Length: 485
Image (tube, rainbow, N blue to C red; front, side, top):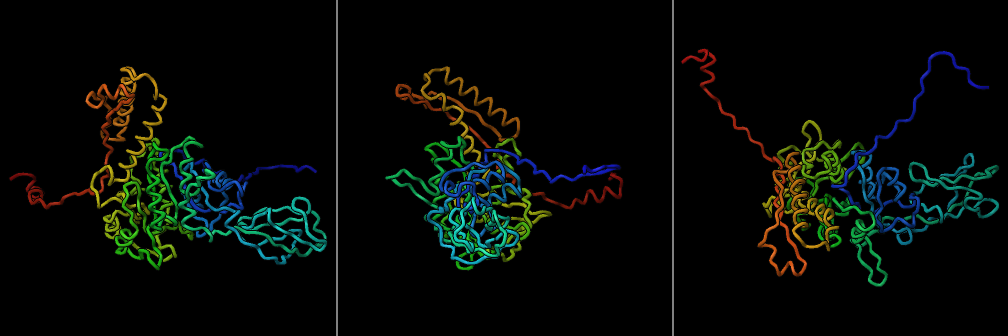
């Protein structure tokens, strides 16, 4: 019988997710391990760049789990889409279900209402062997497999009557088998296959997007991985540059457990590249612990996206949405601003709880070894890389055009208009390009070479603001005399 309505009613709909803010200047390229058994195509999600514009797309591409300790990529997925709501991201998973796996020993599981839940993480659905009283069952004929919110396999029987238990065995992925070599990767000359960080080369050819920020939460604390990440920030595809975030080790064995340890651990890690920002310690949102590289990269991308997709702003002193900072084992870290400044003086960024939790620090890892503003300040370094990349992308179609004055005028006029617009928007102090005769002798022109010269000055961050206070006795006297001498 249809419902008969009389009166006033309301109906509640599920909360709609807010669309992420989008920007590509700080495009995050995230490398590491993901629970690919939960992906749409578990065997097609390894060592390839996969673009995601939403949390759902990321889950479909590589899977998702709150088990950040085993699946470091999920830190960045969560920080990007759930904490800061910024997109897109590029995911490069190195966990290979054909290699990083182990057997699931046969065991009996109870069936309730035709459903058995296998409370084991990492199960590969296609490798399950399910046996009932009548023998081995056939997937998608006798039963179906789905995964619950905890990542556990849920076996649903098509004909459950009378079945009280199932014997289940199979294969599970094993992220503990991943090594630094898997992250660093390499190139197989005989097959042409690329793995790990080498896959960054494929981002532009496959996705037509240039990497902005490389991040490998947790794994980047290892000196070999950090060095490999720094090396991948330049000469991408022989053309492009980008920056990266790396974590400083906080482990009990060899890490910085307190702020005074930071300098020694940074030096021992060999983090000195102007293209990387070193982060210490970890951070928290509720009970979830994130390596700071994941949160800082997402915050930087969010800052860019809210700034017309121009990376001239430092992510320092931006509200991050975290609830605390800690070591990777969960030990709470309490820093005041004075201590945070000591960390900054080592060329390491941290967090500062000044009314709200904010990122804190604008120096690259090259500081204090360099004071060149182009290489010391992270936002200035990023502006140079971003402008260089955009110049290449803009004028690549001019290659092989006649090297004539019309080409020179087209480049100079367009870039100076663009530079003036950035100055007018206060994105930089100045930016202009020129074509100088002394840089372009006839011999070079005859060989098809042209050279332009760009002057650019992004604003460095106002790191130290001083207000000098002085007691003025004249003001005191004026208060009693009415200003009369």
